Length: 115
Image 1 (spheres, one colour):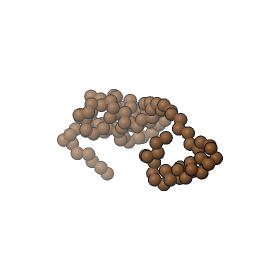
Image 2 (cartoon, one colour; image 1 turned 180 degrees about the horizontal axis):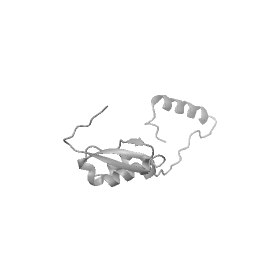
Image 3 (cartoon, rainbow, N blue to C red; image 1 turned 90 degrees about the vertical axis):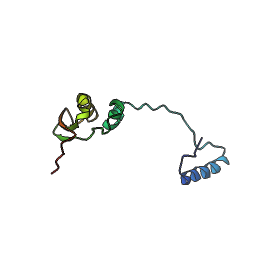
Image 4 (tube, one colour; image 1 turned 60 degrees about the vertical axis):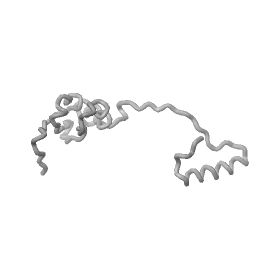
């Protein structure tokens, strides 16, 4: 078993325990391989959109305001062709609280107003 990636304190503990148990001829640690499948449901909206949207899109739209079950997204012109995809990802990732997504386009020339 390769322990090189563990912090030194944890490695020292394991080595000490292993030395104690070797005298008892008992195996203290066993490495069991596992396959872990990470699916769509385990990813954040940002992770999903980074995989689905073209690489030339610099700013991934993953933040939104929520009122009730409605997610309101402010989308830039460059992502408008993908608005349905973005909305569906937000709904899928936030399935417990978002049922509808709506967008308000933001052009590159307009300034966002904050209150």
